[in-house]
Image 1 (cartoon, helix red, strand yellow):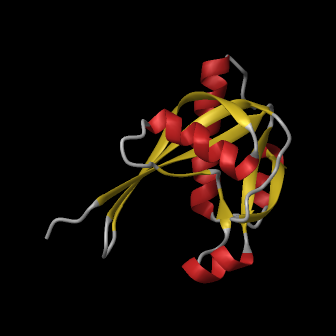
Image 2: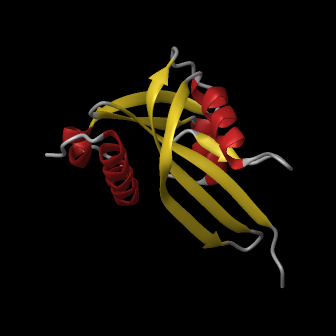
Length: 144
């Protein structure tokens, strides 16, 4: 059986040694039965280029503009109703004031040094580490 593809773009945003992590609203957590932690981003509209969708979703969900560095992680899952593909990009140089959409209730600029102490899921920590390697390699920053 052929399943429709759903393609989404997410931004793992760095501001020097901090990363932006969002907390989904209670309604979003309940509706989708999820842990509730998130990166800004979402699905592509029909005929929308991937990078345009990423910029649009980041602006809609956070009010920020960012500089996209490069893809950092690709997630692929065949679900009952669709084939989900999420491309996560390392981003930096956030510009603007954070203004969350109704999808999220809070945001956290988490110091990378404190990442392991956070209550974030292990997969999220690993994706942040991968994106940070892309970010530091691109920017020529020495990692500890």
